[in-house]
Image (cartoon, rainbow, N blue to C red):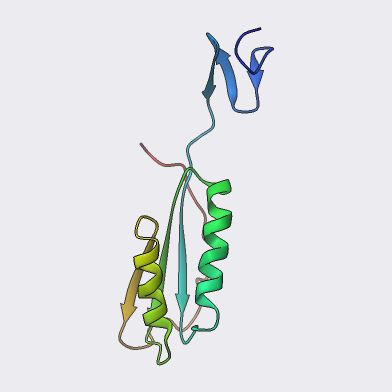
Length: 113
């Protein structure tokens, strides 16, 4: 038996000398969240994303854009950035700048390095 994967090919790749070699393309996802007056939803959305993204990508980052909110959205986003500094960033717009969602679907590409 060659390593723990047995026959020579396992779910993570090929076994070479007893070690699994991961041949999947490495994926990086940047989740962009734009919100205006989303204090009731932001924290739950970010926590849900933090649970889901590790299963979808090797590396991920969440960028929240506070689009001129007049409620506590900006403060909640700042708290989340302090709580998750490695994966969560905030951009603050002083006024509402985003009026429509993107006109094309957003996709991810394999990391170039």
